[in-house]
Image (cartoon, rainbow, N blue to C red; front, side):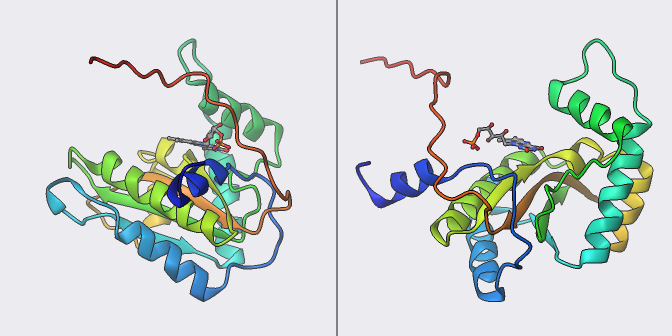
Length: 195
Ligand SMILES: Cc1cc2nc3c(=O)[nH]c(=O)nc-3n(C[C@H](O)[C@H](O)[C@H](O)COP(=O)(O)O)c2cc1C
């Protein structure tokens, strides 16, 4: 790779097997700083990072997510990842966080047109900083998919989600159980040049 940034970008992989060891406060604060330093539309800076490390809270949230997905019906046009979450929840034992010791929920203002975009750049910044610190990460979208679910919303409000906020995404963080994951080839993501 040509430079350090591309090196970190290509090293980042979605980690779905974590060691129980918690991410240190020092590393966590660097990761959050990377998220907070992300650009935002109109320099809005309205992304909200809810960091969950409490084991009981994570467990309650997992069970609630499983319960709510298990109630859902699979329709013809249900997105494949949501379908997988529904099927896994109906089967039981579904853990949308992959047992990561830290989950960061990223929210933004409801009705703000750049909510998802702002949170996405923050999420990528955090994943890259995590990679550079040898911390594994994985984008976690289940709480975004369940954003209009009353029980999830109520629970997240207890954790600090504001009344006017929407959940845009999430991030699992922890030490990876798998060392040296090779980069995944990109066969899509077309580039069109006009010269
Ligand atoms: C918008 C978005 C949502 C994603 N949601 C999830 C998710 O909910 N659970 C998960 O395990 N991975 C999720 N991923 C990770 C992708 O599956 C992963 O990035 C892709 O398979 C490529 O693998 P890599 O990240 O290891 O390069 C998501 C990624 C993005 C960008």
